[in-house]
Image (tube, rainbow over all chains, first blue to last red; front, side, top):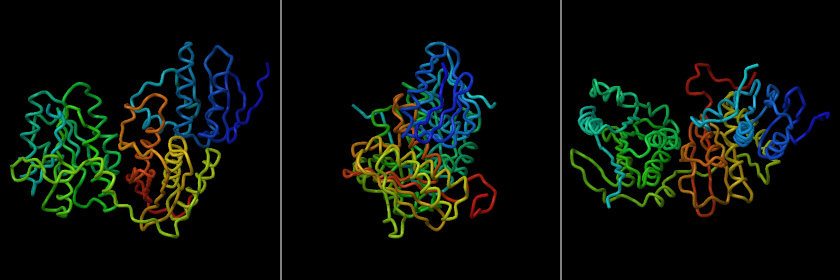
Length: 109
Length: 323
C-alpha cells in the first residue's frame, strides 16, 4: 500500500523507508494529529523519523514523541529520531531530566 | 505534632559569623548521616569547603549565582530535586538565594521563592537554613527574611519570627512588577493555530531590541511554552506583551486562570505526572530565561520572562542583528 505525504498544519510528513521525514514545525496545533499518524504506522519494525528539516519542536511535540516511543516499546519496537534539532535534545535534558524514555532512540545520522 | 520542616534565616555579619553559624549545623547533619546540600554564592562555598575539611566531599555544593540566577528556578531545579533524590530521609540544605549585588529585578522573585519554600516543603522532613549578610544587604532584605522564615537566628540566638507572614498570601503580594510601558508591543492569542504567529512576533521584537539570535530564539521558545500552557490550562484569551528594557527584553504572558496553583512553575519535573506538560514547559522557560516572574492572582496569572542579550557563558560581544 502506498503511503502518501500528509500535511498537518505547519508539519509536512514525507514517507520514507521505515518511517517519515518531517519538514516544518510541531506544536500544540498539530501534536494530536501527529500522535494519530504515529499510532497508525502498520509496520512491525522500528519506526524511523528523519528530523533534519524540523525547524521547530516544543515540549508538547516532544511529549508526543516520548509517548509514541513508550507505546512502541510495549511491542518491543523503538522510535528512532534521526538528526533531531538541538532544541529537542535540550528539551529532553531539561524537561525529562533523569526520567527514562522507553523506546526512544536518538541518532546523529 | 511538630512540623518536620524547619526553615530558618541565619543573619550574619562577616565570614567568621557565616562559618561559625553554619559549620556546627553542617557537622551535626553529617554526623546523623543526612544528605546535605549547600547552594550559596562561590565565596560562601569556598569558606564552607575550607571549614569542613575532610567532610567537604560528603556535601553537595551548588553555585547559587549560576543555578539560582533565575530565582524561580531554585525550588524546582535545585532544592526540591535534591530532596526528591532522597525519599523518606531528612535532608539538610543551606540555601542563599539573596546576596548583595543581586539585580533588583530578581530580588522580589527571590523573596517570593523564600516564601514558597514554606509551601513546597510543608510536611516534608527537611532543615533549610538561609544565610543573610546583614552588613552588605539593605535592611529591607533582612526585614523580608523575617517575613519569609518562621525562625530567625541572629547573633547566636534562635527565635520564632514575630513577623512571619502567611506564605501563600505573601507570595501573592511580594512580587514587584512595574507596569508594562504603554509602548509595549501586543499580541492577542486565541487558539493553538496562532502560536506560530506568536513565535514570529516574539523573535522579531527581540531581534529588533538588539538581542542576538540565540538569545532571541530562547525567548521565543520560552514565550511559546508559557503561552501554550496558558491556552491549555487557563482557557480564555491570552495576552502577550513584549518590550525592551535597558539590557533585556521582557515578554509577558497574561491569562485568566490557574488561580489556585500557588506552586505553578516550582515543581521539579520528576514530580509531574506523565501526561502533564504543564510544569515541563515552565521548567524549560526557567532555564531559557535570566528571570521568570510568576504572579498567580484570583483574576488570572501573569508570567514575565526576561532575557538578556548575552548568554551567561558567552564571550562574544553584542550582536545587534543575526547572520
